[in-house]
Length: 621
Ligand SMILES: Nc1ncnc2c1ncn2[C@@H]1O[C@H](COP(=O)(O)OP(=O)(O)OP(=O)(O)O)[C@@H](O)[C@H]1O
Image (cartoon, rainbow, N blue to C red; front, side):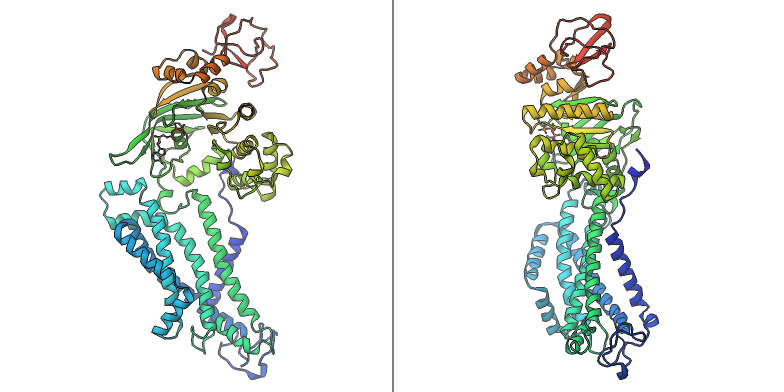
């Protein structure tokens, strides 16, 4: 893996620009008494209603007051009001949301019904009511806005807490004897901080807009104080005489609201990309996703898994849906996982990638990919490994591809995230990948949506996306189950072909024993979360050793026929070494051919033995 692949995704330029703008605004507001060229209230009737000039860069108002100075002091009002409203909203909404989300029950029901009632009243109307009750003034106006914010933040916090409280680390905290307060504040709150930060930054923009509106209506700051809303209000009367008057305060309000909103957007994207969990902040980022349980490991394989467990909490305690699974996948090998539905195949694959859904927990003595230990890594660290190290192809391509984005963008996304490619370079590479997986007219099809592709073609798109960062291991979970037989064959051929070209190892999960017999080098059979037998494909299907494997084969007559077909023994002679058969295109190391490339597990002369259709390997077993 090259150094580029590990780089953090760069922040979007627009987010950086917004952050810079807001920084300049804060500095200007704080240093307004020093930076402003004139006192904000200095009257000079000689320059009354003049436009921008060298002495007054933004012109002067109807009393000859310097517009630039008033704008600078107005920034103080705007920011102070916004921060006041959002701080009050956070102070009331977050603890309440944390409490009702964590405690649930009638606390939750009462709080949410009250929030529903309050939420049904329009914000401005609510503000008018509070101002009518408490009197005019910026503090009262912002108090009204902060109540609305608090209700919104209560909902956001509660929603996030409902997700978090079901996670295993909360159970672990309880087991450790942490009290409710410490669990809520020390464990859950840091994990819900991400969406709250994003929401708060968006509310800062909203508060700014409300401050301007209320001041414009004369309900905010007192008439003497410089504020952008008041400047806009005054400019209405004199706009015909001096059209510049509303331009700068209007621009300031628009830019500031936009900047807060775009900053919130940027933060949401950045936080989402960093963790892939939607709630990536806080302690879970530092918590290991796969817990190491100790033990020795082989150093030979590309993927080594030892003692892998996946547990889900249940009323009777944690249930192991994957129980002490161990296997190796060699470089360039196709390793099959078979077993009945619910035996734990998908969970095994998800656990290897650290993607088991909450509240599942993963434990392993070792999960080593290409020499790198994955146990003990946080979710953010694993997210960086997934694209370049492990990629996944799922059963249903339409489910796994976003329906609202063109496929080109979906293939380019991991390239931009993991490899840090520019938009143009990622698009170029996406076109190459689409062509490599056999999508005709690839460049033109980059702008098509998934629904415009047939099943087989959509599966190819997903394979292209999975291959975008040259993964060392491709996990294919029932990649052909949703496809008809002809297309199945093409997709399997494609996977094998890609394995040959890129030496990608494949962990293939399938119900279809015929497919597994044809394409896998070795196969592990799973039953009730455990691997009961692992063997080379030919041996496993020809002479199953475990009764469950035999029963599995016997229970699927169609597959038995297919397997038998794949392993059919043909009378033949051992050809001369070096004679490469026409049909044997998968493996360079296969130097022999037998008839029409469909030999069985019968030893030939010199110990040669055809272990698979299309393949003859000398002395493999
Ligand atoms: N979110 C979850 N919470 C609790 N148990 C789960 C969850 N997801 C899966 N399981 C359980 O884990 C076990 C293994 O599921 P898994 O999806 O790995 O099976 P599988 O062998 O891949 O089956 P299939 O071939 O039908 O996909 C099943 O008993 C399933 O019910």
